[in-house]
Length: 207
Image (cartoon, rainbow, N blue to C red):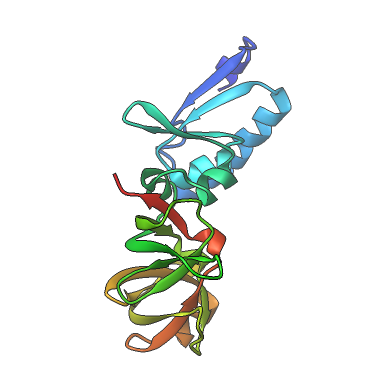
């Protein structure tokens, strides 16, 4: 990197420079490279197949699919507002479900699935849709209400700062994320209830 910077290039290309490092050193070098890039002020293209690294390192992400640009923008928008099923499932794992989009008499749009119902603020027209919802965007409650969906816990997996709850919502499988400090609250075989904000229920018309 020093050899590349000494000639003061207009653009610096880094092609997966951290792929051979262990996780701890890789994290430290991500911060160091970001600091160097900000200090020297050179536009830098950082190529990576690591989704977390892409979010950590970038001011702007260009997501490629089959040699074409699928979506470009700031990391937050790419992650939270993916424009396609591919984008939603490539950068961070999303739950992909099929359902029927319907506009209710009060104007609220909902997606009706096989034993579940989610509110949504999508602009798509009513009809069959594919839904993308991220596991960490669910709210978890113990009591049922009209906006909650019953979730049967089948398995829980400890992954460090979070735990993954694998289970079923109606006839579909779902993965929910919870903080590890609450892991002991959840018991496989029990039913809890999930809520989600309409803005976090993304709908796509199927091809």
